[in-house]
Length: 142
Image (cartoon, rainbow, N blue to C red; front, side, top):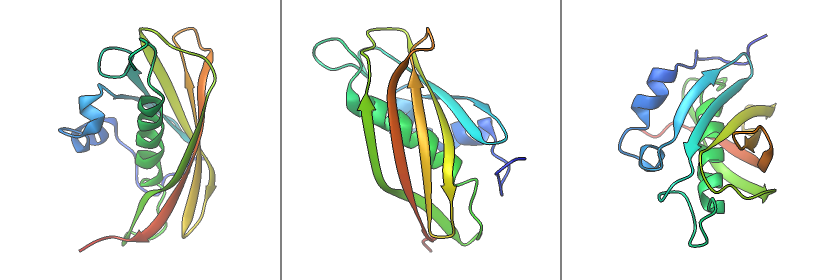
């Protein structure tokens, strides 16, 4: 059973992300399932740290992007918006090139908060980072 209150759409997500950190980092939305959003980010000069491995902040940016987009498709009240309240990440293994793939899945969808788990994997499907994102659900500005 789908968790969405608004049908998520890959094209809409990409359009909303134009000219933002998301597009600057090369993040792409790939797939939407009944209870998840998947995307990917290149491991290149935009996303690595000085030692040539994926920057932890880049991993967190991908995690928050996927979780936030998904969270805003699960709102119970159309007059609200979900914004990041807290995020943590455990970096499991380094990535030096190619792509890193992320999958965001809800752990809790409430009226005032949501909690999302985002798993990042390398091209071989090995876990590289696991993140937990807490979203605050608040009144939509304006």
